[in-house]
Length: 205
Length: 146
Image: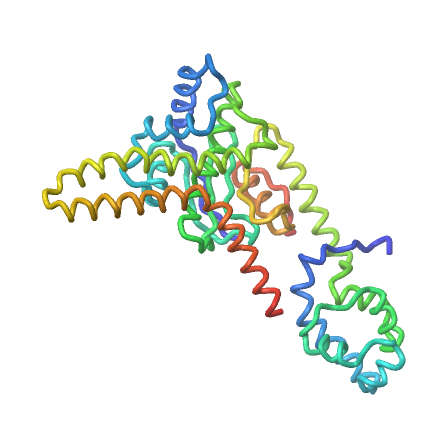
């Protein structure tokens, strides 16, 4: 399996973790929604969350190399840290819409945890981390959308023609709801999709 | 049985299926038996045998393989290996090497790693990948041609 070259980069992610610790030390640990809000604020993520913006966040701001390669089938993503070296690898075979950006956020959360641990402020124990990383991935996507939706409604309010304005409201409402539901249900739907895929494969063998 | 290991069916059956079908067909041809004759001697339905030979079914249960081994005049062990139930010694050594390296990597306190999994367990391939990542991050070599 070809692995991308390993990079040693300045430890920028620690700055974010230190900020979170200093802001929330009185109520430690913060929950995943709070952590998601923090990362969105700290790095100014948005207005729209795409895979490209996330990769850019990891590479340019957090200095974490990200690669998309062929992984063993049961791995959707992988992350590791060793000293100040960090890396995220995402499976290039994730076919479910939005799965790759969800996976990237999941892996990012696990790297954050390793950094919090290193700073003596773990948020969760390793056995529970998987579940928390899933919640974090959902929360970040929702946080970005929740910040942008009011702006979009504001823009819609400025449409002069009544029926166009109402149509824009409806589209934004339906689209926003569908997006938020999609974010929340994605891990579940991915598993259902994967099970069905496996069932179909078994039927053919 | 001491130098053999029970292999996880999920890992090996898929790979073994195609080869196994043609392998048992060649064994039957070599003994000059028809499917009906094998059915009579091994007490295995000829329709089922035919499906196995055409790789339409997974390799049968080890108990059935034992009866077939007698009819096909090969050892039970030979059929178990062909069916993917047992590993040959060299494969077992490689597997053990990967398991040991994986254990080493995941217990290194400086090495933090995590996954997003489809399903609940890591295959040998995934463990090898994690070991390779460990080697890349630390610059240490744990696997020698495994």
